[in-house]
Image (tube, rainbow, N blue to C red):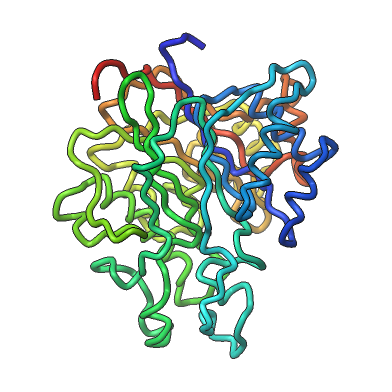
Length: 374
């Protein structure tokens, strides 16, 4: 990759575990097969900035450090090790008990009663890895922003109790604005992992929440009066200023044409005037949709753009749910999805269920390195 190019990637790596502390235990040695495979995927693509979704959070950040030391910085099948001197991770809403019966099943303290679904605090967390300096004092997090404080939200008020409406947070994990310094300029890395628009009932509470978690970034990058309602965990209000550079990263759990999303959810970003969509694609996704058939046959979207290999029968089939969306004032020089066709190098790292890595694929976009004063 040219030295004036920066690769930014997102990868739902499925490095989540069933019990607290299990991921740290798995990464303490170099013997975990899934972690080795995930590391090889990262090495083959060698992004300069990488968001990992579904990476369990621990307060000491031990898992992040162990994954870098024992896996990313160790060669796998002849691939060059990759080093990320900068990392950011923080608490997630997953597994944080709300004290309320959020799913109306008459029980308290279940995984579905947490502010974000999780069996323990930090399950399905996320981490940003970077070869460029992270401007730590400028980081903004929005974990405690309440859903009801979004004007015109889709919260199903007839489903949630008054107490639940008052307490429920918008973000099922968190929303982070992580400014990264590259080429003499600041680029805001906007990361999140909205809830899947499923696992609910006719009230569609998860589909509605997914839509509004995506809308949050649309309002944030719009700035001005459209973002006045937004407050971060430190109490600072507002969104991005005009002209600021950003990249929206993450598993948004929303396909523009297929699947069960609230209508138009991801279009809030794909059609935003400040956003460009490089449409990362792969040949492997096309072959997977063809060979797996079933619900993929009736899909309206272009299978080249799929980023996740989901259950084909009865639904939802393979979908585009993982995104790298740069602002229009950044120059895109390339884009892709790491989904090799069968027999191509690296195809053993994607495979089919049970997956050797994840049911998601790494998605990358190459940008011309911004230069000059901020």
